[in-house]
Amino acid sequence: MIDSSNTLFEVKNLTKIFKTRTALGQTETVHALNGVSFRVPAGKTLGIVGESGSGKSTIGRCVLGLTESTSGDIMLDGVHIDQKNRSRGRQFRKDIQIVFQNPQRSFSPLFSIRNSVSETLNLRPDWSREQRHTRVETVLDAVKIGEEMRNRKPEELSGGQLQRVAVARAIAPEPKLIFLDEPTSSLDLSVRGEILRLLNELQKTLRIAYVFVSHDLEVVRAVADDILVMQHGKIVEQGPAGDLFRNPQHRYTKKLLAASNWQKIN
Image (cartoon, rainbow, N blue to C red; front, side):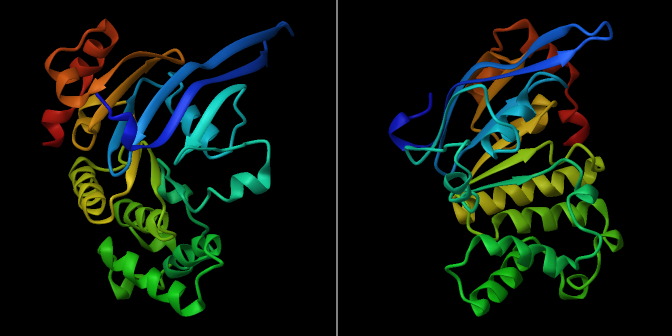
């Protein structure tokens, strides 16, 4: 059970309703999120698991202001993040970062690796030019991207190397929380393990909180302290990772466990 006294990030009753048009021109209402609530303690990892369309990625889009929620509260360090107030939302951008699923689509082909990471530090106007330069080199060192790769363009790096750069870019402004949206699903199995180990190492060193989104329950098991299982926009089960694996309660959780590739990854 999560200790509420150590809560860094909290979502309360988050709801997102989309209105779509059917082929016959009728309006259809889709509940992408339906009353989702959870907490993430400082320095810990919450895994959010579900199949495509379960709503797990919509949570991240709402938190980051990429999609406006219909209702609900999002708080960081007890302070409400107002999605409708853009200037207010910008204050939290350095504190909440994201790593996307496909690293090839996450970078401008015009920027070098070094410049791509440096650009994120526009979120830190309080840092001097020298501080920013030092920070870029420090985070690239942390994810083991060598000096010889730093002036290359994204197309010159492998998928695994690019995802390491994506992690470096996310940690560069010293965030408190990182959303990891299917960060290993587009990578080879051997590379997935490397990225998971890197994330664990960085969390121990930097005390960053993670929200790790995946369709694969066993991949999340490698990093998560607590797990939340979603289906059709609702939470069907949540709890400590160990308890959920030892004694899953919901049939949907059991289905995800049966479909996982943990043995292949390990």
